[in-house]
Image (tube, rainbow, N blue to C red; front, side, top):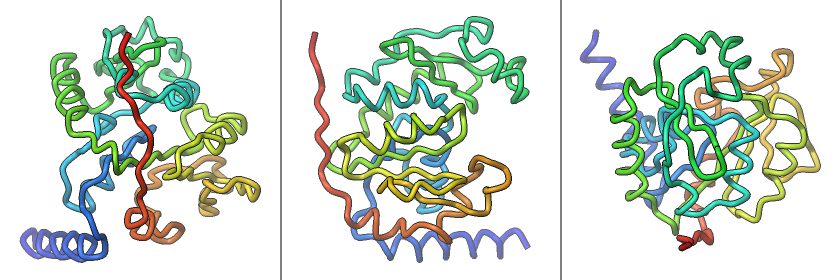
Length: 218
C-alpha cells in the first residue's frame, strides 16, 4: 500500500511539473504555502520563506520595503519577547520550543518547523542564496492577524506576480482569490490544499515576469 501511494504521489508530481514551462521560481509567502507548493511540484525550496510564518502586520511591512538586504536575519528572541504573545497563546504555540528570528525593522519570523536557532539560520541563509530574482511570486492570505487594511496594502504593492487568498470577497482588488469554503470560518486555512479549485497556479507560474528586486547597500 505504501509503495502504491508513493507511486501515485510521484505521478502527480510528474504531471504537475509537465504543466509548467520553467520549474524554477521563488515564492515569498506569509506561511507554509511556499513549502507545500514546492513539495507538490517536487521542487527544491528556492526561497528562505519555507516552513515558517510571519504575522500579517510584519509581513506587509517586509514586502513594502522588500529587498535582498531586508531578508538579513539579525538575531533571535524568545517567545516571551515576542509582541505577538497573546496570539501565540491563542494558537497554542506560546510554550512550543521553536526559534523566532528578527529581520531589519524588528520583523518577527516564526520558524515553527525548526528545532534550533542554528538550523533556522543555516536554512535561511542557504535559501537566500537560491532566490531567483527574475522569477519571484508573492503570496498572502487573510489569517495571522490580517485585516482589510493589510489586504488592501498587499494589493497596492507594485509587484506584478502576487496573489492573496481570502475567506471573503474583495471584488475591487485584483490580486485577491476568494475561497468561499472558508466563508463561515472567516479566514483561510491550509489554502495550499485548495488552490486547484480556485486558482490557476499553472498559468500564474507560466506567466511569471521579472520583478524589480535590489540588494541595498548601507
